[in-house]
Image (cartoon, rainbow, N blue to C red):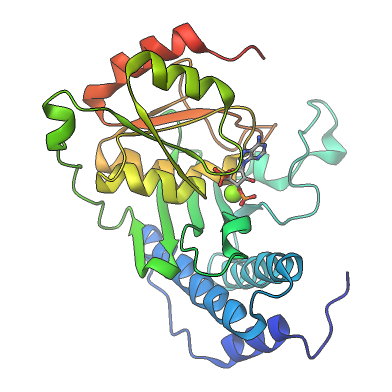
Length: 296
Ligand SMILES: Nc1ncnc2c1ncn2[C@@H]1O[C@H](COP(=O)(O)O)[C@@H](OP(=O)(O)O)[C@H]1O
Ligand SMILES: [Mg+2]
């Protein structure tokens, strides 16, 4: 749909373009934080300008405004790098190996920014909800970890909080309840929790904590408000790259639900499942996951 020149999203972007964003940091991790914060402030403005009467229009305007801002700032400040954004045309398509003409730039690049301009789009469109985020991650070919995530930032603008790898958050404290045998708290999708997670939670005496946005759920594990995030059934690289970069920099466990490594900038951007948790919980959760793995 073509955007009206006078639409609230357009007006918000115009204001942002004329605002002095200043010169961003040179260090990639600090740049990721800067970019996520810029997009986050713009999203707050879009929400304020449009209100919540038309949720569909608000979601579309938010996705577009944040994507356009990130694309243009990345083109301006990191012109040699490739970008994978949820809102790019064809972003979800897997590259069929061998078809050189269709090969996306990112697969031959040394540095790729993997961005989700608005994660938790549904929650963004609901008045009063703060569980939505902006994700900015940097993947590099020259790396020592399997994920090859060199930097990441998760902005949660409606919570006035940004987590990023320039200053990785402290490792979460062991909650008193868990230390004394209380239930493990597993963050799960508020609107489409994987059905096997309910059975798994019953099996290990855990309680589910529903919330929106993959970034917000991983941030809850980082802050100690949840003990784990488990997801399966579908997701893409942009949903987890930035929060996994932060969780890993914090020292948390992050893997596929079968315990294998999370890998990014792959020919197929689908990355359908993951588990993020404190290291002490990983053996127990991975064992429980083995008993409850969903059939694919
Ligand atoms: N089964 C599925 N298939 C594809 N994407 C999914 C999914 N379940 C969750 N996601 C994506 O993961 C993000 C977090 O979802 P949830 O809030 O339900 O936990 C959302 O990203 P977006 O908001 O960027 O689309 C959502 O679209
Ligand atoms: Mg997302």
